Image 1 (cartoon, rainbow, N blue to C red):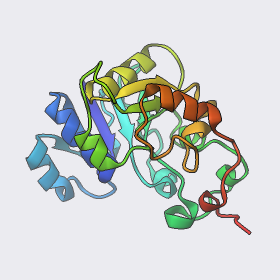
Image 2: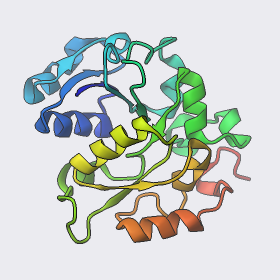
Image 3: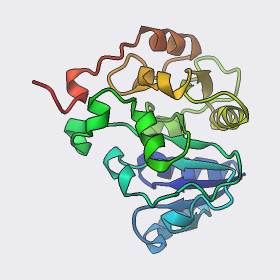
Image 4: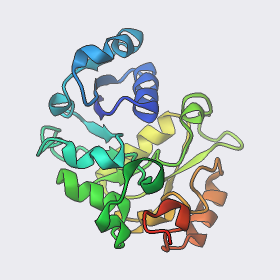
Length: 222
């Protein structure tokens, strides 16, 4: 597949490396010029591009940038993808640690729904809760014991099939986590976040989640 990745940090860079190992064509961008990604491009064989061009003719787009920077993306940033191509967003809202207050999220909007609204396209939420080193190193073949499961929130249909296929090919067990409206179940502060659970434990953790934002993950902590 042709995959466009917007963001070359720990998760975006790791996905660039792993997806190239799997033989996919990858266009990768950051918030600066393509020349700043020359080392990553040389290492992986990915093509460094401007962010506005990353999604062009892509079969899959991945957005992996700090939450606070999402509004800075160009209008229509993912519009150049192929018709029906899914968009993954790996972001997390870290108000105290990095992002400052985003009022809509603090007022109750689901983090990924806010991202989808900002970029003008539906999204799938996945890769947001796994440590990048484990994403790089701990994938296992399908059927392996103790395979790490990753929740995937988003709409059903062909796009979900593509996303689940990518998760599986990377060596992780995709778990249906409901719609984007349900994706609060895998946000920071929930039982599944940051855990390397198997599929059954992942489903149990998703079911145990509370929609209340915990104090550590709110900008409005008393």
